[in-house]
Image (spheres, protein in one colour):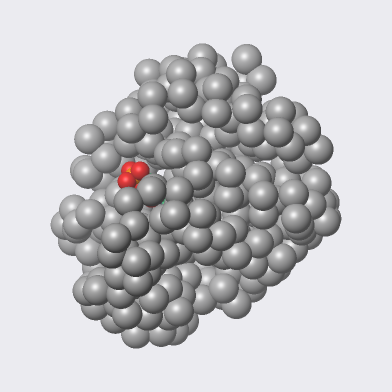
Amino acid sequence: ALITLRQLLDHAAENDYGVPAFNINNMEQGLAIMKAAAACDAPVIMQASRGARSYAGDIMLRHMIQALSEMYPDIPICMHQDHGNNEATCLSAIRHGFTSVMMDGSLHEDMKTPADFDYNVDITERVSRMAHWVGASVEGELGVLGSLETGEAAEEDGSGAVGKLSMDQLLTDPDEAVDFVKKTKVDALAIACGTSHGAYKFSSKPTGETLAMSQIAAIHAKLPDTHLVMHGSSSVPQYLQDLINKYGGEMPQTYGVPVEEIEKGIKMGVRKVNIDTDNRMALTGQFRKVAMEDPTQFDPRKFLIPAMEEMEKLVKDRFERFGTAGHA
Ligand code: G3H
Ligand code: 13P
Ligand code: NA
Ligand code: ZN
């Protein structure tokens, strides 16, 4: 059945677990996530970016989620808009059956220019009012994702830097967070603590300086009843970098968010953990392996089946380590 983010994260908070939110844009990702969820008995958050919606089409996505929930009737699914950039994006997501939306007012509509607090409050509050009337949930974001190493904000899709930011933009302020939640009435709040989108988050294993998990504890202390969200939470596992590079890839060495840091975050009030890059890498690693090991192969299923299996393994691991397993 389809459920809202509020329903799911309230349950997660009551039972002290976190929920990975996996980005999807195609059927194979949906199948891999649901297979893993059924094996672990875990509730699911699937999210589509604006790019995913235009790639698959809203009608296709709507029916795909419907199909997945019919195939797995015992697994609760929240369908969430990732990084909505304005009211129209959030409204059309809800009209297409999404049960939850993110209004990302930390940036302007172009998703490049950092926005000020008043702009963010204003647009998020309007989306929140509209969504709550029709029973959908809302995630807001306060603080801009970006590297504490370089001071660069990373673009929403991890494709490049948007420019230098100050430390107080890159770290969500706990007092501002209290004010923001009170004014906007969001169900969940995405915070900035040094993570960024894409594969290139840290140039070495993150430390307390580059990944400020302590900021999360400080926010949670002042906002104990707000569900916190960590974006940019792929761990960019070494084994997937190695798999890609072994079979002709050229990904430079990079470091993501260690899963043990996310586990700490969940103890400090993180309830939703956004993951896209890791699954992209799982799929791509197996595509490359099949392409190199069997160059005569041209049946896409021969690429997609091992790719889905690799993704399923990763998704299961996150359900287990975040404590989501067993809660469906
Ligand atoms: O927010 C970032 C997600 O990884 C979505 O990326 O815009 O390329 O679909 P995308
Ligand atoms: P990653 O790029 O770390 O997977 O983050 C995804 C994300 O935050 C989507 O909103
Ligand atoms: Na989101
Ligand atoms: Zn994100």
